[in-house]
Image 1 (cartoon, one colour):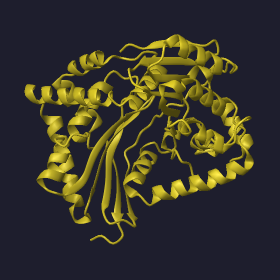
Image 2: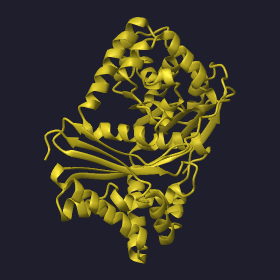
Image 3: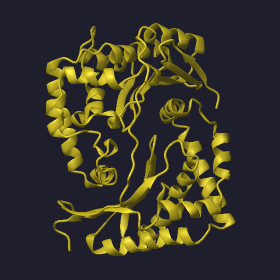
Image 4: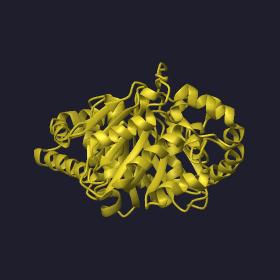
Length: 411
């Protein structure tokens, strides 16, 4: 994949990939997320993602929101357990405007007390909306179960109690402790001469004082399987089964992405979709997710079903797991599975916003970005024996944790 890199003296990096389109995409990814919070700071990374839009030394909140929208652009942000990202899509003529705005809100936010209090109420509503959606809440509660006692188990949104305690001083202390200039990546996908982009980048990001990372994340250890069932105000039973898995640095992660895709990936022909949904009609939603973190990861299988079909559905999931553990994929099965994953990745790269974020994260973690051809080669190198071994290791039924939401009104 052809891309260009430029690094400032303060450690902030720029990555650009040319795209022949009138619409450009740019963003700033910071390698700091909810796992970097202290106990009393739960939800702080996400809180900061909200309040940096609420005022800078030269702009009020309205002017920040209008800066890109006035020219037809769109700006957004998200927080994960290991990253915070601000990004925008805009007509390619407005690179100068977008990078200047990014720089202003990242380095010049003033965190007005009135805005802090108002945004706390917004996030309270966000927390409550998750509580009203069990199919989303269960993923957070499951990670709290398997990462019990570790920062990876904390909810990204935080808790109402912690949120109420946040003030301007706490915000500034977190930024000073957890945001590092050599872990900030400005990424661009669009039609602009790289020299011109570098000019804007240096103009707006070189003024930041160097603040280099000297900290180390506390790795997760001592996983113990857990099983939990809770009564909820829900029509369906919701279930997650899973285990800790490979980290983003583990070469086996490619094979596990493939195994996950076979098990219950986005394809309608995944094994669990064909059995739970197509054959028996027990579940409308069935999916699995492999999420690698810097030192560990998770593999999670989720489905929602009528409570009367819960135990039968669990038996089917376990049966499909045992089939993957006991039988190697045949040559044709393996070939089809690889082609499917390769095609999904290629189609995903057509979404330039997703591509921009993937490039930024890849370079933050590996200091390189693989081409599609290089990724395809890694997928092709996975053997049927390796997939069977992974199924026996990661999907070991004795090591799986399970979380179930039971309907209070169910049978």
